[in-house]
Image (cartoon, rainbow, N blue to C red):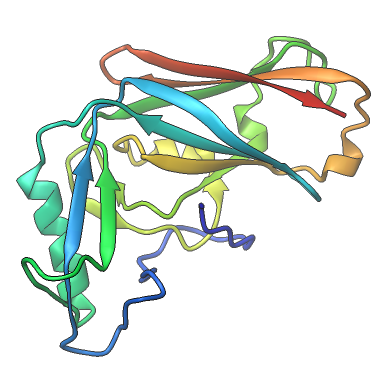
Length: 203
C-alpha cells in the first residue's frame, strides 16, 4: 500500500522503513532488490473518500539489475547510519524501474471540472510514492515526503516509479458529477511506449 501524507511541500530526502526495521545507528539490514521492465500499467486501487486517489502499478518481466542505482540506494541507508549487509533475513524489498518517464496524461470521457471531454487533466492531480525517486541520470533524488504536482515530478526527468498514487487536488464534493465517468491515465516512457489503463468511476 502506498503511504499517503497529505501535506503541501517539495520533495525531501527522508527515511521510510518497514515496521520490522530500526533506524538505530550501525544497525544492519538486508535489501532484496527487484528490477522489472515497464511492460504494463494498471490502476490497482481507487479511493474516493474526501478526494479521488488512484493507485498505479507499473510492472513487467524481470530486468537486469542496475548496479549504479542499487549503489545509490545503499549509500542512502549508509548516510542514515544504517549498514546494508549481504544475506540474512530480508528486512526491506526495494523495487525500481530503469526506464525513464516522459509524460503522464489524464483524461475523462465527460466534462470534468468545467473541462471538455478529452481535455488534459494532469495539472489537477498530484503524485506520491513510497518508492525511491531517481532522475534519468540515475542520481537518487530521495523519497517522497508529501504529494507534489505531476509537473514537478516530471521536471526531474525521472525513472518510472513501480507504484505511485495519483490524487485529485480538488475535494470530491466539489466535482458536481452524477453518473459514470471513465478516467484514462497514460504514462509515456522516453522510448515512446505508452502504458495506459482506464477505470470507470461512479458518482
